[in-house]
Length: 143
Image (cartoon, rainbow, N blue to C red):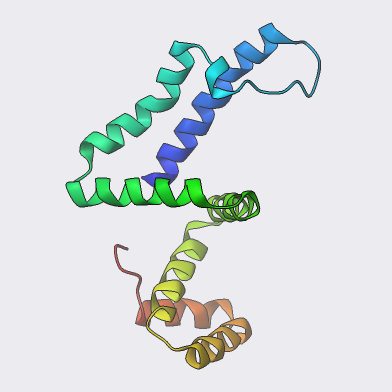
């Protein structure tokens, strides 16, 4: 669901901004407008998916969304860029690989540093079939 919301948001952003950017400048590489430069309709289009997600969320989920937004605002630029690269990488992964990564991450959270390093090394040497078997034995939560 998050991937769908993010994709819809980005698609809407590009469609809405493309018209505005084209009207502002025909030059390739023209800067996209700042939030303040967006029209009210463009802002509404961008925020609509988030509004629906917020309204459908439980109080605990809303609290978590706010905490993540506050944490994002405190991240240095370099860490934000790294996180954005990670999100793009995650979105480009096939579903099976995402399932594997989710299972691996959740399992590693319960291990100490030495055990995590050992599992990481073992994971690197596993074949695709061995990884699938490991994930079947350690399925991710909310799968």
